[in-house]
Image 1 (spheres, rainbow, N blue to C red):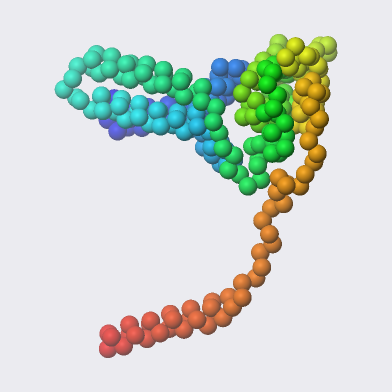
Image 2: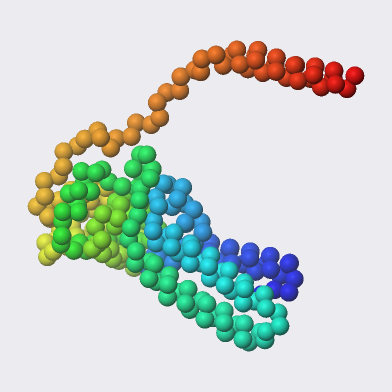
Length: 265
């Protein structure tokens, strides 16, 4: 698209900064911005870093890569009029947008972290999957409220992977929530599970699960140490390491040096 490498570098930098701005808008406004920011490269990489493999993210990455290659192929034809190349690029972008929308509906995901960082315990997941009624949450927390981040990270992100019929609606009058503390409903989380309603201020995973179990009439599963990750075992000192590093390797290095000098003479 650019006639000079310096211009191409500026365009690439502008695109990168644009993804940062999109992530910032998602952190402030949430909603649609948050969904769009979920397919930016930094968020994709952060998802994989936590051991979570999402089918929609993999498909989105493949679609964006293919669309980028197609746009590059369109603009490499320097003999074609710019207007035609621009129209073909718009067609590629439109097709990619439609396929991306379809890919965003895929809900399959796999938690490959050894500590199950992105999931509830297996007993809780089995109990939640047994709840067939749709669940709706109305959260009265501002986008920059730390409690909203805790709720989203430790509870709702895991709940979305377990209960596909979950719907979350955030309600706030400001972005920070500093002047909403005196509001009667601010900080409340209203639950609606198949017509049964409840309210709670707990933002922890345990508090959310407790409220859902009460509404569903499900007995919470007993705590188990099966999913408890205690970390890697203590490293034991390797046997014979001193002999290898202080005797074997120096002997091999000295022998190689001796053979090399002998051939030169």
